[in-house]
Image 1 (cartoon, helix red, strand yellow):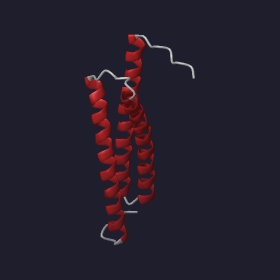
Image 2 (cartoon, helix red, strand yellow):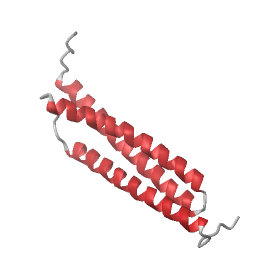
Image 3 (cartoon, helix red, strand yellow):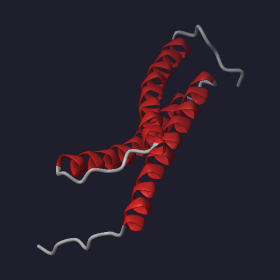
Image 4 (cartoon, helix red, strand yellow):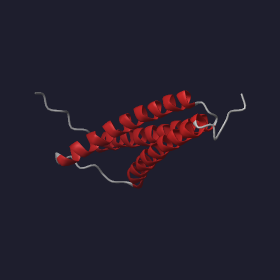
Amino acid sequence: MAEEKALTPEEEAQKQLEVTMGLIINGGNAKSLAFEAIRAAKAGKIDEARIKLKEADEALVEAHNTQTDMLTKEAQGQHAKVTLLTVHSQDHMMNAITFRDLAGEMVDLYELLYKSQALTTND
C-alpha cells in the first residue's frame, strides 16, 4: 500500500476548511429541506413532504460520512486543529439532525390531522 504524501501546513489547513465547510453546507441543506417538508405538510402535501424529508436525510448522510471520516482520522492519531469554524460546523450538523427529527414528527402529525379531517386543504 502506497503511503500518502505529507501535506504542507497550508494544504492541511485548506483540506480541513473544505471538510468543515462541507459539514456546514450539508447540515444547512438538510435543515432547509426539513423546513420545506414542514411547509409542504402544513399545506396538506404529505407526499411532497416525505420527499423533502428523504432529501434532508441524504444531505445528513453526506455530512455524517464526512464526520465519521474526521473521527476515524482522529482515532488513528491524525489530530485535526480545532477552530471555531470546526466547532460551528459540528453545532450546525447537530442542529440539522435535531430539526430533521422534529420535522419528521410534524409531518406525521399533519398527516394524521388531514386524514382525520381535523384539517382540510383549500384546494
